[in-house]
Image (cartoon, rainbow, N blue to C red; front, side, top):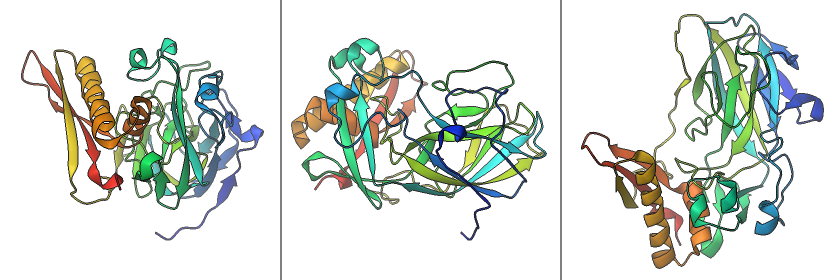
Length: 316
């Protein structure tokens, strides 16, 4: 994919913000068709590194969280239009991390199962992330947070996603994808950050493989589209290797989708502990980085089925 970068935005303080706010002055104005390379900080803004311990990770501050690079004003974008963001390239800086917080913070899918925090610093080598026990996770980098400023005035927390995008954590928004974002304010005021080198569908422990990264994107304004929430096109494969491959799956069955989801992941943690020699904390982290959750059925009332899949190819 041939392209040339028109603008580069560093992760210097003047280019970073930590809340969605349509009153922020844009740090850059671009024309449709132009390409911007964003340097993005990690999700907790440099509070951790390769030497951080699990206990230290449990003490990181979430005030603020999600440093975002932007906002960028796109000429011609008006409320009711759609901003097309073509993701051209994503580059990690050689390291990342996955961790979960102490259970009393109530974060992640299973806070009641893990009283103390957990942390793994990943060495990222090209397209591979290295875990314990010689487990290797294939990397497919994407921006966890990608969106426009909302129409509602004031500061808005970056944690929940919104109609205009934000912290969606969709792992298939990789290089080669085009993300379509509703525009609610003039110029769209686009920002991105919170990049992940890899993630399982569900991001169950509350982090993917969080990593500082560069995101290169081309912008266009679509006046012929009418969408109320983000949509995207992607040729990203739905399996880690990009081909059909052996999987091991656990199911969760319950009359509530969240309860079924928790059961599916608990059963997968049991499997990884018993069959792959991981601690329960290590298994929880691996689930967040590579295990994919899928809703298998929502029609056989009163119980619904959620399935968790782990690819066998990651194990030595």
